[in-house]
Amino acid sequence: MKDRDFISSALNVIAIESKAVMNLSNQIQPDFENLCMNILNTKGKLILMGIGKSGHIAQKISATLSSTGTSSFFIHPTEAAHGDLGMISKKDAILILSNSGETKEIIEILPALKRSTSNIFTLTNNDQSTIAKAGKINLTINAGEEACPLDLAPTSSTTIALVFGDALAIALLEARGFGKDDFAKSHPAGQLGKKLTTLVQDLALMNDKAPIVDQATLLKDALIEVTEKKLGVTLVSDDKKVIGIFTDGDLRRCLNDDVDLKKTPIKDVMTANFKSIKCNALAIDAAEIMERNKIFSLVVNSSKNKADNIGIITMHQLLEARII
Picture 1 (cartoon, rainbow, N blue to C red):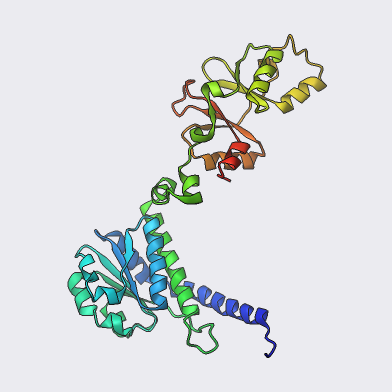
Picture 2: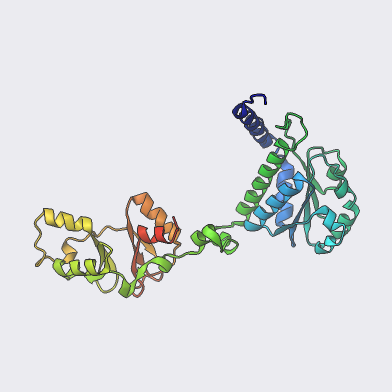
């Protein structure tokens, strides 16, 4: 077997496809804005169609759209010809992907598609193709060169179609004001779902379970609370809210300064300038605050600024819950 330079081959493919993606930015014309506005005004769903590699890309784009606020699903053109056309209503819109614009299976069902809805959009590399001319809006993108040395296997062309789909989905996401809470509703499962749905109060030690002492508590008694709750820290309260936090770092400073543990009230040696988070905030936000400030615990406050729901959340709890 002849020696091959696999790395050089791979780098050549990456270079060709990278060039195609960069050239795509020059092909986003005003029709892209028209497409976005038409999709936003669509009362029904956006249906994606394609055959072969274009079909696989269409399925991925449809999935991305659905998870970012644009209701969408994929219909295979062949299945559409055998009954799935019944899934399309007048309120729906159709986005057809066909690199050549001459995909036979799609051309054969164009009359039926037009009877189902007047909102047909197309993405091709030839604006004079049969499918392009059938679209209410046709967007043309051209890779220029396939990464396949035979110029046969769809490579660069499918890559730019995929990037185009991501650009479309994100443009629509931003236009809809789609946020984290919206994203969480469509991603309840798995690691991503956990990060987007787990609240601080779901993991934190709250109220009686949290280490907390009154501001007048002597340091020696406060240390008992620190020891019993096993977090190396205690919150300090004035009966209305948390006013400070006492950590093992504060204890080391007390020992270095020869502070009298039996006579000193905790309020005199606590850290009054502490970081906190609301109990109904996302746990992942707590992790970001800790990482940004290089700390290992956060005071948890009530969502209603009351003293009836306070506690503490630690980096250990976030790690144990696999939030980070």
